[in-house]
Length: 231
Image (cartoon, rainbow, N blue to C red; front, side):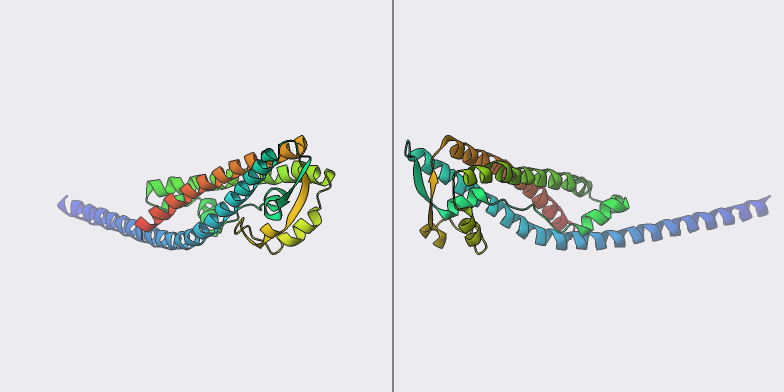
C-alpha cells in the first residue's frame, strides 16, 4: 500500500510540476509578447501625437479664418460686396483631409484577439476605445468636407468668386498664419445672405470636427501616459 501511494504521489507531483512549468513558460511568453506590443504602441503613439497636434492646429486655423470672414461680412452691413484677404477665403473654401494615424500595432493587436496580453486594464480599455473615437473623428471631418463641396463652393461659384486663383495659391499655403503673405492678396466677394449662411455653416461644422479631434487627442494622451507608466 505504501509503495503504491509513493508511486501515485511521484506521478502526481511529476504531472503537477509539468503543468506548472508549462504555465510558467506560457506566462513568460505572454510577457515577452506584451513587451513587444507595448514597444510598438509607444513608437506609434509618439508619432501620432505630433501629427494629431498638427491636425488640430489646422482645424483651429480654418475655424478662426471662417469666424473672421463672418465678422467682416457682418461689419460690412448693407454693402453689396467687400474685399477680403485670400487666407480667409481659403479657410472656408478648402476642405481638410481626414486624420490618418499610424495604427498598425493597434489594429494587429485588436484583430488578433490578443488584447489580453496587455495587463493594465485601463490601457486595455483605452486601446479598445481608440478605433471608435478615430472613426467618429473622421466622420465629423468628412461632414465638414461635404459642407465645402455641397454648400460653400457652389455658393461662391454662383457668386462669381474667382476660386481658381485661390486654389492655385493654396498649393503653397499651409494655413500657418492668418497674417501671412496671403493677407496682401484680396478678393472681392458679394455680401449676400447665401454667402453669409454658407460661411456660418462651414464654421459650425469645422468647430464640431475640431472638438472631435480634441476628444481623440485626450484619448491619445491618456494612452501615451499609460504606455509611459508601463515602460
